[in-house]
Length: 364
Image (tube, rainbow, N blue to C red; front, side, top):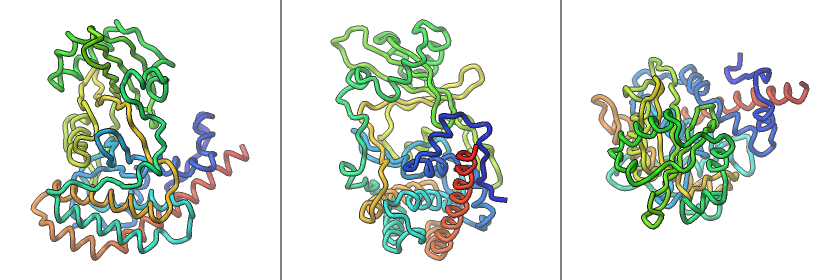
């Protein structure tokens, strides 16, 4: 049985509509299949003896972000320990599905060579910063690009709009307790003296996690800008023999992954536990863009080299146990073709399941 098969009976009409979108439906299905894909990877590829690292966990193209601090692969909800090859397979599979001209082959040799070159550069010289993409202005959709948090809020887009669609009382005890715990993790409790909550609301993320959105504004409007916080419940993917979480708090896990893979890109990171739920939070940047468009060959080369340097650098810095760097490098050089073959097979299985799913939707 195809592990990627889903049935539409329990899905909302909004989600089903998104899956049927000709431009983005197939990739959304791919995004929702991260854990089944990882499970399938353990079936298709021998994991025993493969070097382990602190994984990004879900490095797909739409997790690549551009903001005032730089550009990098972020979103570390699924970061955890596991074999290094998973990050490579997941990322390259995402690129293969985002080409402007779909082909039967997985990826061109040219693109695969550039990813390997970037990865080895990052792995061999982890003291160097990773390389951001160079075509960001041409390919990113700058739907969120404002000079300040005030401008972002006035535009009433994305998280500002979602916050206002489901507003919360700014005096709510639960909201204030959650905020206090978050700020305490950052040693920023002094903000509660200089700022006040002026807006708050609830929203649901792409994968159903609950978010509390809070606007902190300075009590003296002449002293600083507002701070827009996103504090959300964390994913807790089950541990298994090959992939597992080494941290007691999932918020700390995500913060450590961010420091490792994308230092400085995400701002005001913090965490807390409230009413037995674990939370992770960040400041929402007024300038933020993600690569949504499909990629031509030159853009594929650009992004794979960039992410290659990012993954290689972080994998080297987080090698587990007594594994020497040369052991991972030799493993990759020997197994690279096999890994791309497995990634291609999983993509084919996943797209077969997606086509079957959409057929059921249309027939329903």
